Length: 312
Image: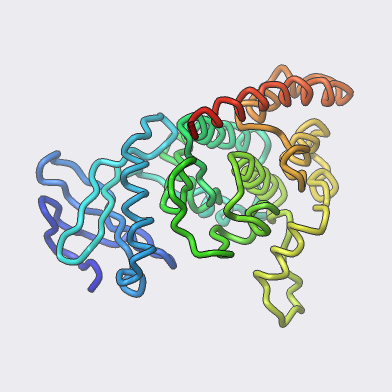
């Protein structure tokens, strides 16, 4: 099982592998109907017979097909053929944000480069949240950058559609430890859109400092994932401006608001995150942070009320 070069699935001809990971593999393929190259994602062999995972994978396609936004990679098709569950996406020529970060000598970006990417990511998530979808796995490898630098969010495979029956096992946490919110670790069945706000804060932190908010001690011989999760729940991150002195105080404050442990103390939504990142706000004195946050909190309450209506 597994895809291979020159394999035919429906009207797609598999060409070469683009990426692979624990949950799936992505291949470049030629679409004989659309006459263009596309990206096809398929479940890895060891997960194909996991019925729970296969359902989540197909959920990805159904949810993703409904999302039409300039910062979300379009899904073109979802199908099962030759015992392969496949998701067909538009092929984005470029690299992932993770690869961009790794390509830098200090593994970090400057402010002027980082902010537009974060704004693209927040715009995509805000759109998804307004449609009742929480991503739950926001991380650099799930952000693609085209040749012009525009950011695209991918992989809604573990997204939680609000009001939809949960398919995760009791007590199971889904996500990537370096970017998981405290509530996603402690009570994964009770999260809302603010878990994505926290994850964006983690990604922004890494883009500007060269490391996530919490990292494992290299001397540690224990469970690294457990140690990082415990830090997200119990420890305060070092303010990014203490790691990189050139980070403006206002940006430092915005990131720290996004990384608040309790969702009620956090930036209440991606739209509010965006407002605090716009150029006019960044130029304001630090004393205005509380006032901007108050406005953001009121807007966030409105968003929570709107989302609650989707459950009715």
